Length: 123
Length: 286
Image 1 (cartoon, each protein chain N blue to C red):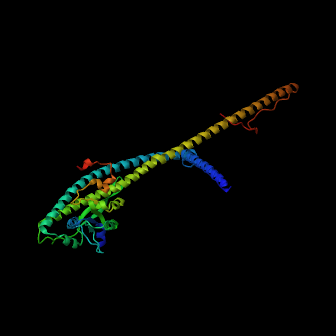
Image 2 (cartoon, rainbow over the protein chains, first blue to last red):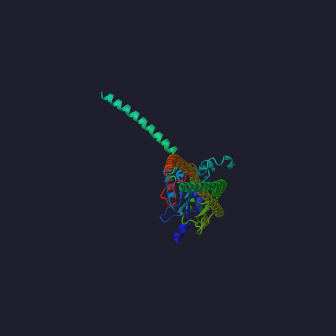
Image 3 (cartoon, rainbow over the protein chains, first blue to last red):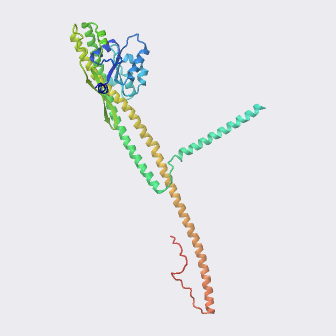
């Protein structure tokens, strides 16, 4: 039964500031797997880039995570990891943080299709 | 003295290198231009085989082109949906963040409580595949699994804001799952469009010209063979003509001699050709 559940259901992971993580956990996506590993990471202003990168790579390599939500301001710091990730699953989704509105020109996925849309589409 | 010898060999070596390079380039050019065809024996059957193959290649090319067009159309529609969804997401996230601030204001800081009480996730996603023009695209489907772990949070204070907050964030999660779906299809489609275009170009610029060169090679070889055959027949005809004239001349001489002899001795001629003679028949030439 457990195997069927883990095969059928995959998780969302979230990397963001405290408020973002709290909000999403209240939305119901938080889980600790059997090794007590969480599927979320709270990033403060002083969190080292290496930690963020390591956690992101960990999330991307886990088979039970289908989507990784990451605040765009944090995504900018580890942009190189996201750009290098070309597998369709898990899918990396950039979400706006409360201090910075969503900037489509920085989104890795949309930049792949650059030339196919202009800034007017976002007004 | 040694330096002079070394210089001479250096120079010689350079000359040799230059000529080798030239030779290599000439051979490469020859290979690229005239011998870049399939190596088969130039016969009529092989010509038919090659013609069929050419037809097949044209058909494959047009089919692949149609597939590339269909994929491109789907790609554009997904891109448009992504742009819409991202805008919507921006608004929903703003609303959710706002309700979070409200809840914190009235309910105090519950972040630690939430972060510590992580158990099992209620919102999970399933992956399905959608088939578009032969390409399997992954699609996420969101579903709810268990009960709310945070049912008791906020019972003491700020309960209404907290439940509104939970609703907002679960709405955001649903939208984000759709968005992630679109994004994965987008990435997969991008890859398959690149692959298909590469194949179309390969057929158009490599395979078809190669087959055409093979066909023209076979045709030229066959034509040359025909010309040789024709020339050979003409030559034989000429030779036979010469031989026949010589034979004709011999016969006339013999007839004259016979007439002369008959005048002297009236011996009936018994040289009547019959069908049962062993004489060889002459070849029929057109």
